[in-house]
Length: 114
Length: 112
Image (cartoon, rainbow over all chains, first blue to last red; front, side, top):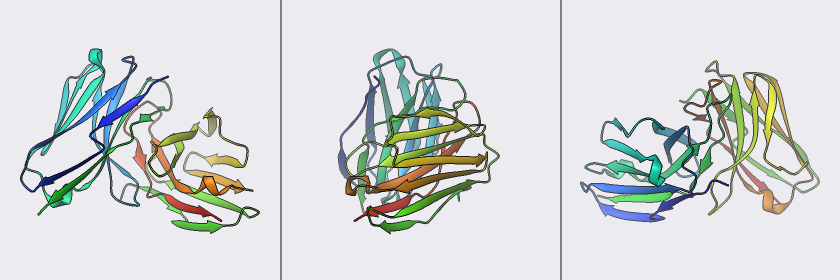
C-alpha cells in the first residue's frame, strides 16, 4: 500500500526566505506526482504536476523536483511571501488508466511572517 | 474559480437525518471524485466515477451513497451518519486520464 509522508508538518519562516518542503513515498511505481496548496477551510489548488519521466517542473517562484527511484519529491519556494501561507499537500498517482487515484500526504502547514 | 462548485458549503445534521451533497463541474471532464478530509488526517479517496460509471469504492460505509447522473454532476447522499463522519468533503474532476485534479471548495459537514 502506497504511503506518502511530508516533512516538516509545520514550518514558520520570515518573509523573503527560500524554503524547501519534502515529500516521500514508499512505492516508486507512480505515474505522476502533484503538489497542491490548501487555504484554511478551502479546497485544493494544483500547483505543479510532475510526470514520472520528468525530473522537475517550475512555475514562477515554485520549483518541484522528483526522484522516483528514491521515492522523493521536493517543493522549493523562492523569496517567500505572506501570501504563500497555506498548507501544501503532496499526492502521488499510481496509474495512467481512466480516472486517477491520488494518495495524499498529511501536508506541511507553512506560515510566512511579514 | 476552478470551475468545480459544491453545495451546500456548510451542513449541520443529526444522526437520523438524510441529506445530499452536490458537486458540479463545468470543465468538460469525464472523471469525478469524492474525498473526505478529517482533522489531522490525509485526504481519503471515497469514490471515483469515470464516464458516469463508478470505478472505485474505497471501502466506504453504506451510509454514504454516491450518484452520478451525468459527467457534470456528482452527488453524495448521506443517511444515519455518525459524529465521526464530521469532516470536509471535497469533490474533484479530471479529464479521463490521470492528469491534474481540479477541486471544489468543499462542504464542511458537522454531524451532531
